[in-house]
Image (cartoon, rainbow, N blue to C red; front, side):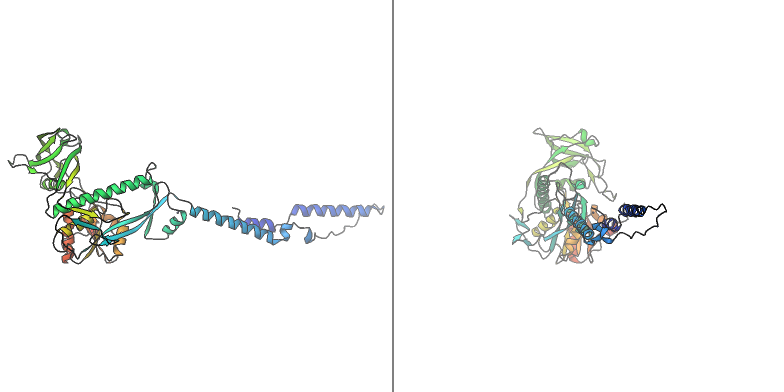
Length: 432
């Protein structure tokens, strides 16, 4: 989330037709000369004064001011009609604003926003709000000129070029389908991460889907390899089973970049062992280095098995950005007590299968939507912190979070009333 000139028409109508006046003066003189010649005298006839043409001899348009006023009215009406038509026509812009904010521990249309079944759950006094952005305009048709003009006069709405967000070959159906898929994926990863953090067994199948010669693993691993275990080289330790992506991430967080690890994989139906040299994690958006190492391959997560089930009562909301708040809500139900005490918190962020929180769009709108529900503490992805600085609603603190585990710690600290060890987004302004 921007005809004829009436003054010249009046001037034309008010100006006498001077060529017509001159012709009439000439005709008067000729008539006078002919009359003098009938006396037979050769003397120069006395000049006779010719009266100025009477008002009745002027053009009708000059005599009737109503004619000029009529033209002005018609011109004005045409201008108004053209402006009105332009305001009703679609533009090349879309519009964004704050969307609904929903308490994941609450209900919508008498249905729980998030319901956990199959395992023991616990009530909570915490209010944990997921936040959204409302958007107007589609890939094929932007908002009207009137809507664009209205948005320009509002500080809480934002215009954006449609083509900056949607390529020309993308349809509204494509966007809707993508949003649904991203929402479903965020719900699946949120449930898996929450169950794992709450101490429940989570089983996933991790399959290599992309390798790169840029990393040492690119010459060792192949697309299709399934990872089942990992251990450090030279330590004589047994393999640590890799039941899910969170376990792999936790193991690598304790490994120094450049250190070798042994992987137990299944390739073409047979179990094998290979050695891989790890590489450093990529710096975050602020240039800060991240702890631990990575394998340097892309993996897919399939065949997810949880001891319980998380279901969702949301409609007409898509995209991946509710992943973090789904995770906190599910974790809150799986653990005793209230995660954030009696606090009212909100937030946003994607949730990876490894528990990492990713940046999202429209965070300023989301903070405004949260503020309308009394949210005083907002959890923001570290990668979005720069966008929040200077836009915090009154009496709202915006906390930087990078992982699901860190977000749980932040929520607990807010509930306990001790935020000494937490990091405000505004404190990152000079970092990187």
